[in-house]
Amino acid sequence: MDVQQQCMADLKQAMRAGDYDRRDAIRMLLAALKNEEIARRRPLKESEAAAVVGRIAKRHRESIDHFRNAGRDDLVAREEAQLAALAAYLPHLMSEADVEAEVRAVIADTGAAGPRGQGQVMAALAQRLRGRADLKDVNDVVRRVMAGQPTSG
Image (tube, rainbow, N blue to C red; front, side, top):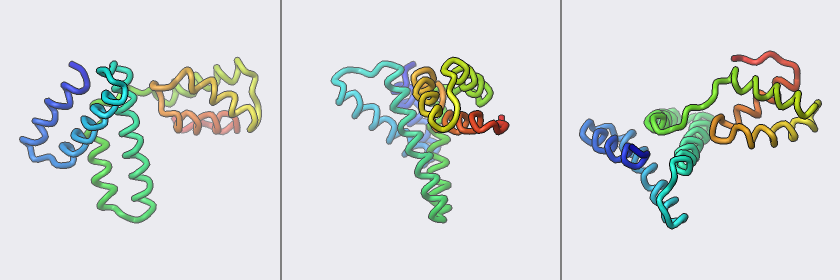
C-alpha cells in the first residue's frame, strides 16, 4: 500500500475516532502529496512521497521550536500531536551511532580537520545520508566529533 492509500485509510479511522489533530495532520499531508503530484505532472514515486512527508515533518519540528520559544504550550502540544501522527509515514532514520560511524568514515576518507573541513565533511555526508538521516542531526554529530567531544548516543 502506498503512502496516499495508507493516508486515506488512516484519515477515515481518525475521523471515526474523533482524533482532530491526527485528522488535520493527515489532511495536510494528503494536500501536500497532491500538490507535489500536480507540480510534477505524474504520480509520485515512493522516494518522492517520502521526501514530501519529511518536509512536512520538518515544518512541524520547526514550528514546535518556535512555539516553545514563544511560550505557546498549547500550540506546542498541537504540533507535537500532528508530528506524532506523521511518524507512521516517515522513513526509518539511522540511529545516532550509525550516523557517527558514517561521520568518522568520511572524516577519515577526506582527512578533514578544523572548522573549514566541516563543510567538506557535510557535503560528502549530505550525498550519502539524504533521506536516511536528518541532516540537522548529522551536522550536530559532525561538530561534536570534529571538536573531539563524546557523542550522546
